[in-house]
Image (cartoon, rainbow, N blue to C red; front, side, top):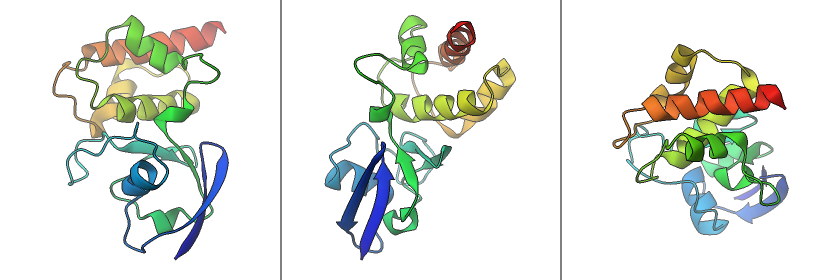
Length: 155
């Protein structure tokens, strides 16, 4: 079936199999490999992208369901060589180790800050609760999101 989706601000149209998952469309058809595919059970959150500004697990969404929607992936965070404050926060606060969960965490954090520019630590923890990080213990991730919020408040 033919689908037209806006991905990272660009309209794309492709013929897709009706049962194809969005994560596979992004990675295999569009070669946007920043979105990770992890658990096959929708538990890990590594595959989170934004659909119309809301974080969604791309392993639970069929590509066909995205017809007419806007999808934003981690590749869209950096603009003209400048890191998004959330990306910079992960660097500044050492919020990643292996990096596998990072794309999903970044997209979730970006959506949170777009909706709530000054979240509490509890709100940050709630927002990222759908993502599993096996390395960090989450303290630095919360600190990174807090750092990004503070930087955006100053701008």
